[in-house]
Length: 189
Image (cartoon, rainbow, N blue to C red):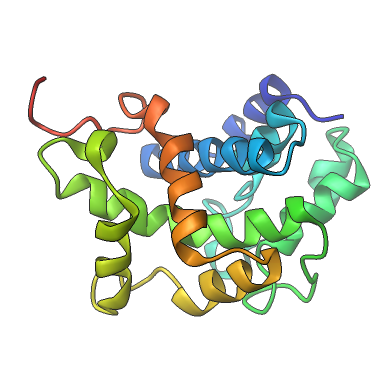
């Protein structure tokens, strides 16, 4: 089973851009919280989350087309690779998210971008961010416009969860990593 240390080793050998590493950490943190929500292995879900954009920096226009064999060759198990591939469902793969792990990754990949953008606008960063604030910005299609809201809503539906609940879980998961992901805000407490 993929460990978080191994996922970081594999991902960081390919991903060098700071913003992509921060995104990997955002998704990692949110996936850990989703694992707790579903009573699953937190570290394993975090590892899959950290590794999800393995080929994006090198192949942005062919995202996930250079992932499968490379991850298998690195010792990542087939079902873990499938989870990584499923986050691009309907966008760049036809791997439908079926398990809670896959559905969660599919959903939080886009959602963490909106949460991050919201937190960056606040003096307290993510430390006092609420789901209500995120939902307000979620409704504004111009805000964090590259984050695919249809995917997020489809993912919530697949998970059988309300958008607000998934946002709350993700915020709680990301909050402990606020300093590492640059979401502490500007106001000192």
